[in-house]
Picture: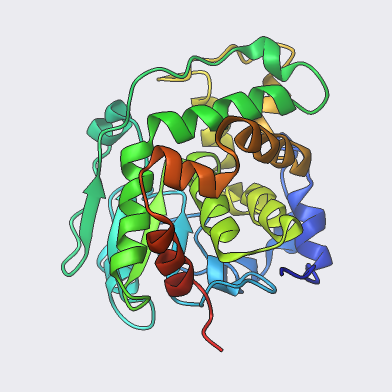
Length: 284
């Protein structure tokens, strides 16, 4: 059974800040070099799921990030592939257009994996107007599970076959939505508490701060092409624990929970799920 972790108050406070309000630079001093954040040059929103407070996942195994800002420098490549991280596979959870426009960089010793997602997932801004946007987020994230099956399956296969020995990193564009869905799935399989999973989800508000203005501007362009003047835009841009809970409830209704999605939709057996869970978790 999961236990309720003691979450760092300063991070919780920052993570609950509106996406349109800049975080004070003084409040961020040292945060991006302090767990669960991991400093990899040329990336942002980079964290170790095993370094979350009370995480059941073994540290040094599963990393999430917002992606590579503009290729990667020798320092970034060394941090990615060398000690102490020694990441051996990077899974790109972006669309075909995003991947083509900004391909993952080549890093010696690291396999970059991009598996083409499905097409669809139109943003309905009206769903974001009520409350904190719970309906819109739940719909969008269920679409992530549907459209990005190949990439999600790839991450799970790597955990299953890696025997808990090979570090893996996954990313999308901002490292908050598609990446957040996969992180929440892995944390759920490992037995993390609802509070910890929601905390990891909203912590991206802190992680994206270095690229916040650029990311907000990009929401109105490209594949999403959302109306930034629409009443629900603020809810779409923000990260709220209530939205993650609404998504988890939708997964229960649609798939019978995250494990039901992994077995029923992705096709993993119960024995494989048990192996994934064992490889993820801290061994006592």
